[in-house]
Length: 400
Ligand SMILES: Cc1cc2nc3c(=O)[nH]c(=O)nc-3n(C[C@H](O)[C@H](O)[C@H](O)COP(=O)(O)OP(=O)(O)OC[C@H]3O[C@@H](n4cnc5c(N)ncnc54)[C@H](O)[C@@H]3O)c2cc1C
Image (cartoon, rainbow, N blue to C red; front, side, top):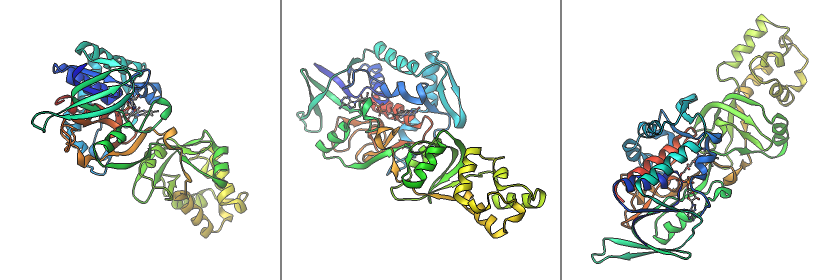
């Protein structure tokens, strides 16, 4: 049971690393504790896998070291992955913001990776747990071999790649394995938290949002530091939709966030103009031209209940100004997020300071590599997380 390369985790990054290494003639085994590899690929992008983005830029990734991702992303780009997809005749389409999705099914991407594994001789084992990893220094102390114990087999390998992802969606087989191995080899881990995850609310806003459940609206959603212009979606628990998911990766517990419900308009000016041009109009009818009707009803109850049946002309300018300000900068304090149960990604992870950005090898433990979501690099929504998995897997695959 001797291999050149032992990859633990058969997700996006692990499979890419295995394929790249096997194409170089290395003997490679991928081991996964789930009954099936690539489960997250299958469930991604609503079953259509948003596999990359045309606009991959380093500032679409969060990390304690924002420069770390640059090297891998430039050595295996979105164009490299797109040509692989095209080589396999997989139909795909561009959606908003340069997001590329399969036209048919995410199954096409997994089938492509498994075909490449088979072609290059990668062995894939599922339903297999690693019980211990032992590093054995070779004669000159700088080279290490790894003994990997599973139940019932023992393996040996020259290179060990940890590609077991993060903590999001435990039901899909997510484990803290990567962090446990980091601890064993005394590598720092940046504290983890759920990212790309819906916000939850308690109290009065929870009931308001329950009533609005299913309503979606394009807004600018912001914290003091970051803003996203996309849709929000009201849910039974709080707020979701692309804008909320994106902001969740930047939001810290206890912080407020702000919704500008009129991203294209100066609302004070709009109201002022309506007061002159259509003085008999009710505020709700003015806003219903730009917002979902159900949302306007709730806003009316929240912010101008005493003026609901007055025409704009009868509402004092001071009150109108306050309403305009509130709706352009609606402050909300989420009680939290839905957590790892529904999060698309895990923020934090293996500290990039302990890894080479060119190869993903540990600086203090030769032959040990961490790739993909296990590492403290997290992408925005829109295909960035898969691109990081492909790129980090590829650069490790070139040297393992
Ligand atoms: C619902 C959902 C939708 C998503 N949609 C998109 C999208 O459209 N576009 C995008 O870019 N990103 C998307 N993501 C994020 C993306 O799936 C991940 O960032 C990506 O899969 C990370 O790749 P990875 O190889 O690091 O980890 P994973 O793909 O999570 O793979 C880890 C593998 O390791 C295995 N494993 C875990 N623990 C052990 C262990 N102890 N021993 C052995 N094996 C183990 C797991 O079974 C799994 O097969 C989505 C995520 C979710 C949850």
